[in-house]
Amino acid sequence: MRLTINKNKCVGCRICELACSFHLKEEFNQEYSNIRIYFNDDGGLDIKILESCSCNGKPLCVEFCPTDAIIENEEI
Image 1: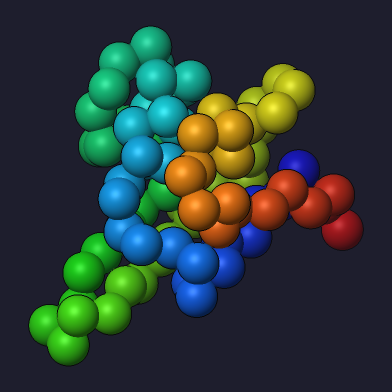
Image 2 (image 1 turned 135 degrees about the vertical axis):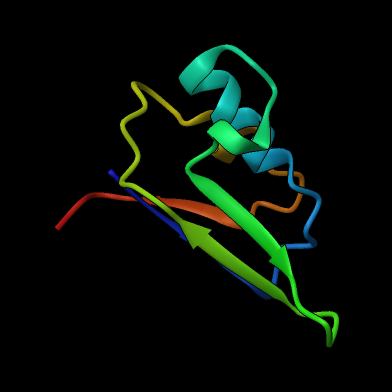
């Protein structure tokens, strides 16, 4: 599965980072997340997905994103 993040919808709340870390390590710690949100000096966002999603079922980051900015895609 591959995730796509719509930067126009993302508000930088970082809930996706916490949801991902909880799924992977059962701990709320952004250091364990495969999604990283960085804030630029100009106020913009830089979003990185470190690895392909290996979640079973619907990923928690998709489920808990308050703006529906994260989309699941089948891996090509």
